[in-house]
Length: 60
Image (cartoon, rainbow, N blue to C red; front, side, top):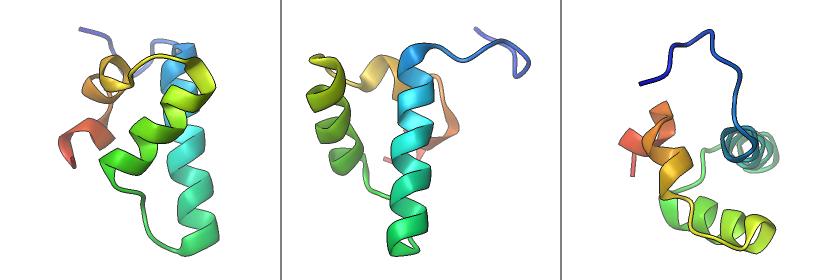
């Protein structure tokens, strides 16, 4: 388990960037499928490891 003060991983930074950018552009947070799709495109692997470790992972 990581602490809130630990530095973010590359995947976590990307997750937050996708969520925040979508929120700013559309005034609503993206759903899991949108985030997973964008992360797969950027990182060429699935997103669950990053989403499980972040608060957005609980939203689904």
